[in-house]
Amino acid sequence: MLLDLDSSQLVLIDYQERLMPAIADAEGVLHNARRLAEAARLLGAPAWGTAQNPSKLGPLDPQIAGLCRRTLSKMQFSACEEGLSEWLRPPMPAAPQGNARSLPRHLQKPQQQAASQRQSIVVAGCEAHICVLQTALDLLEDEFEVWVVTDACGSRTERNRDAAFDRLAGAGVELATTEMVLFEWLRSAEHPEFKAVQDLIR
Image (cartoon, rainbow, N blue to C red):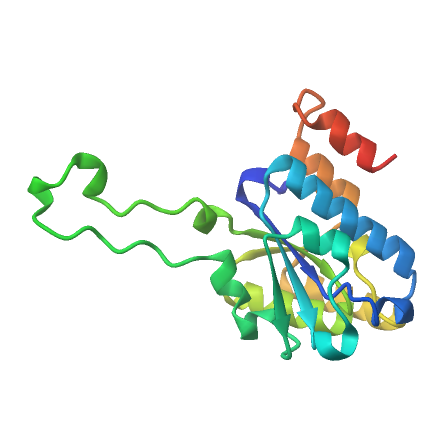
């Protein structure tokens, strides 16, 4: 199964100024997160950020924050506990009122919002075994298709990070790398943004 751009949203979890220095391979993890955010902007995939207890851990990385539609400040480790799922799946509009025969044809059935059709959630962040893990598992419970980008995730220790990936894979989360995501979003060297996305990985 390939990741489809038109059904994708990106969630970037807790790349914060006071947390990143403690993360193993923080520079590489942050670099890949920024590439994901920039590619999402180029290709039109909605991107969302989160910041865990920002008064203690500082704000979300400003480059990532600038590429996200919104940043969710949270205290719960799972962003879903703080309303992330509602951002990713906004409520359907109410059905039009009145006699169905009196309504124009395009109003006779509720129209599905474009955002609600984006059921593939690409997740990356820190720490992999805490906030990423709990958010991803809750997204699965909320009936999203979840992809975790391994080379854009970090923990303070590699053992914790790798244990998170094992558990996520066992739960049914798809594991991918940054380049897998970017090239599956593109699908073809003929995509109009191919050169711009390719430049992100050089």
